[in-house]
Length: 295
Image (cartoon, rainbow, N blue to C red; front, top):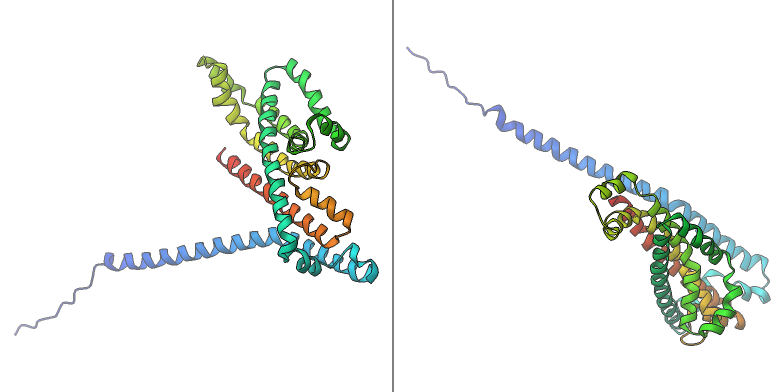
């Protein structure tokens, strides 16, 4: 008698292995993603916590000054933050003229920055052409930087009038030096080996400038642009204050609010002007970071 023994076929080990590996890979991917998110949140918290704490301390000190140090009859000198918010920043009748004036200041800032960038880069490149040109131009660039702008404002008004042209000139004077200095530094810091390679290739002066020097100097130039972006806003506001002919800028309103003792509107206008300056600086900081990473 023959006994039949049933044979049970088991699936090859390769059929189950991919499932196990796939599950493990998914879990590892999820863990990695969670770790990355946690790391980013931790980094963001470390970055944002100090300025938020200092802002909270400043607001607390503001309230303390308004309600404790100032008597009710003198509280108009520094109204509390919520009063500035409700009476100025959240009131369309008050904030709309500020936004319109800020738009004018922004236009002046943009035009002033463009002229400062073009002139500053041109002078920086010219200074890098030789030591004689550097010694001939750089001292005057320093003089332009250290001259008090307020001292020459009357002269600018006398020569160029009291409109947009004079405001733009003030922006250029204030913002041009960092562009000149950083462009010159970037141009003279180009690698000598790269220069020798272009010499062996018999590259023309323009080819060397466009393909080697300017790309190599771009990170340094972006640093100058970032610094100038903040200065040009200051120059535009100063121009608004002293050259009131034409459309009023935010600086014009600051002067008007100061004269009328409108502290609520004065502080609100300062907040808007500061926010604009911070936004401009942040944009150029991001651009600078992008250029640096690509280098």
